[in-house]
Length: 243
Image 1 (tube, rainbow, N blue to C red):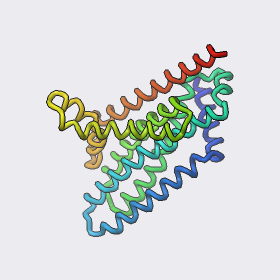
Image 2 (spheres, rainbow, N blue to C red):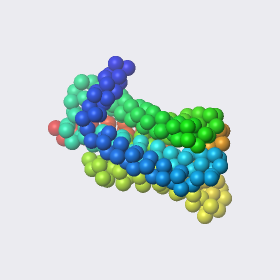
Image 3 (spheres, helix red, strand yellow):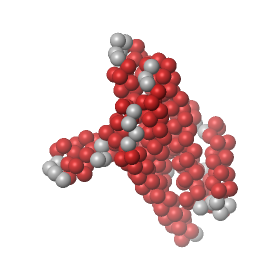
Image 4 (cartoon, rainbow, N blue to C red):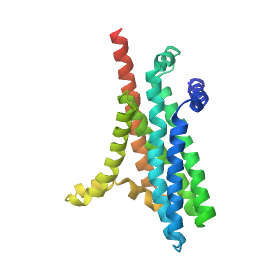
């Protein structure tokens, strides 16, 4: 199992430079980083606390959507070029395939954004190291959460546009749903407020690594991770029946 899992990761790394995924993602990141640079220049005179809060909010959003942009095309391209059949012929099961995809894109997204975050916070804003460290740990779970949702969306449809729309809708629904929890009476208010994702992440901006926040992103990531495997299994079974 481990050998097949590593083989998928190796194959993904070899084919990634030839795809449009890196160029597309780099273009989005370049625009986003340029935008945050302009915002910081226009916000001179802010304390490091305020500047750090702006950066953490910005990188929170960037991590969510870059994880989605990175992961969605990979599954779509596998479907378009009939690579899924080739992989399954070689006894690679759905769990290994989906898990390897999620792992590789989670770490690519996390590594790139963490590196940029360190440059902006430690070298430019002079954010305390302990806050930077907790945020980087949080970005790892956040990357897993967004990548799992992106992979899930791409298993449902063969359209990149539809997958982007679906994944973006899920990410926004979780955050906006939690934000609107104040409109509900108790106990619904307390239940829905838990799903306000950015509130689960914000303690990290104060250097507080909470078990509740980690569990939130990990559990939702695992939920969509599992759903992706189930959907791919159903699609494979349907394909076998249609033969």
